[in-house]
Image 1 (cartoon, rainbow, N blue to C red):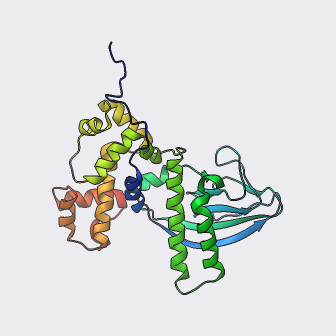
Image 2 (image 1 turned 90 degrees about the vertical axis):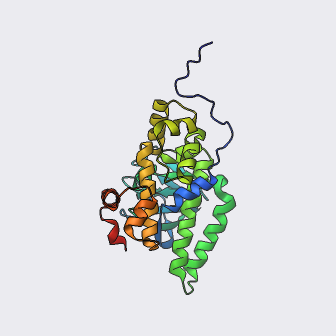
Length: 289
């Protein structure tokens, strides 16, 4: 019988993909700075005001919070629920739905040069119900509030690190629950996750689309379309941005001279490396030193 499938040359694995280390590799490149954790109380139908130029994590400590228009379908956050707003509140209205509603609010900013396409591809909001994250969320919230109510030397650094961990744990839970969208879906799709894994393990290899399609077990066209749909970048563009972010880390650590780092990540000349670097980050690599 003729196989009419156009995308697969083998069936995707039915179990969860090996995304744990891969997720760590990706999230290593998505840096953020958190500067504030605070508790706020709002009355019934009172709006919760958030800074529009910052990202936020909200945890409902008591009561419930209604999320209105502007961020997808209306949503009710119950006690213990968490919501991540990667680009701030946008046009959404957040209103207390009981008296009183207490919110633990974490404010942070993403590094604008950290895999920018991935950050922009995140959904407007990520919702983790209490029962989905209680095993880690309750302890982290308790620790955060201790740091804010009884500040000790180094408290600001501790708060930033806690928010960093909270965001990473939220994204990891989102992936594992299968609710993810955008590039996070690439980590939960077995075929695309296999490709991301080899690209991350061998970032300097001059991959061809047909080689990556073989890793995925898909046709060339089907793979390219699926990868771009989930990750938000064409495969070779994603690999190039990944390599340039690795180079940025090398430059920050002053591991070698600019030209040598360019050669390490696969560029044949310092000039070509500098052009590609400036196109992604807006400045030449020498400005990092």
